[in-house]
Length: 115
Image (cartoon, rainbow, N blue to C red; front, top):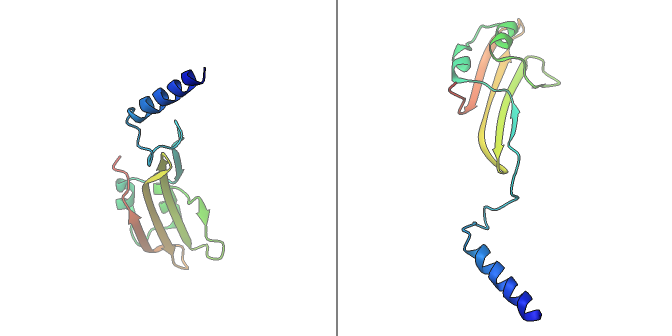
């Protein structure tokens, strides 16, 4: 009886070893894809320029998910896409407005979507 269990255990380990699974990359059978942030394309980013009003910016790329609490003249847009618990896509835009509510500076970081 014990020989059968040992044989099944050895056979299971052998078949699992031959399956080609990389133990360094194996997590759970399914990990949900997590997308967080504002979906922004290159076309939208290219439409932004200094001198635009807050309404014009929000028409092009929408409102930011979060606003800096102490500075209402700063808008931050972020996007992160995790697949299999690894960060695949990441970008950010910071838009600063002057006292009149017009864009004074645009900082971009990362690769935006083409569509």
